[in-house]
Amino acid sequence: MRKIKIAVISDIHGNSVALKEVIKDAKKNNVCDYVFLGDLVNDLPFGNETLEIVKGISNKVLKGNKEQYLIEYDKERYDWKNIQFRTVKFMYNELSKENLEYIKKLPHYMYVEYDGVKILFAHGSPKSVEEGIHRDDKNLLEKYTKDLDADALIIGHTHEQMWYEYVNNKLVVNAGCCGVSPFYNGEAEYIILNIENGKIEKVELKLIKYDIELLKKKIIESGILEEERVLMNLTYNSVRGNGKIRYEFLQEAKQLMLDRNGKWYKDDAKGIFTYFKLYDDDIWLGLAEKYKEYFIL
Image 1: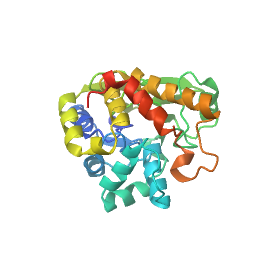
Image 2: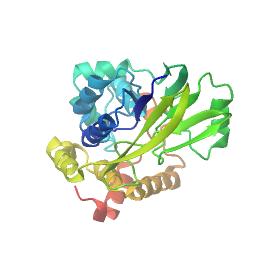
Image 3: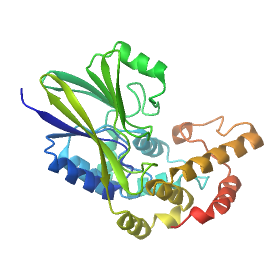
């Protein structure tokens, strides 16, 4: 049987700079197919550029929760009262009509078969774009492999470092995070599946360097900082390998909301607000002042 090499790329989050370097590396490795696991856009403001690259090389593309946010916003068009997460509104306005319609049609999971090897690809889990399957969550791993009608389950979403293991004799792989991995300074994760002799012989965990200064320049030139500066700076900390800043900021915001209101969500939530945990503006801006030493954009 022929040897098949498949590049699996997840969680680009609009980082077209990282994606271009990943594609270059995949081509050097003689990859013959590409699968994208969703969260193609949002966070970094290069949605159209990212989607044009993706559409140009593969029809095996999933939506993630970030695409779902845009789809929900398109349905409701509600007033955006909170200053938080205006990056989503920016991305919605930036996307071409063609690309908005494209993401609406994307599935959240997909079965693909290569020379008798059946693989289930999903963004979060086979159930939902929002559900994350973590390596240490033995219950979920057991649940999704026990009766899995495939040889492997390949996922993303959690932004954990890439990993793979066998559960119930099924291969489970987390493809990592291409665009905003919180563990590295300007490096993108993706995986290559090597299929030969009717099975997945090898999983390559790839870490690819990209030009973070070019990314910074493109962010500044995009105009997104005039719309939303706080979350953009937190995201930029993540791509610089300082993801703990974003994590600590959001955890502290959550705790302040719980202390004040006993909850951090809206009782009448609909659309995009069923996904987002919204914080009061004074909490959001107060923490931005506290963390301002980390805000370099």
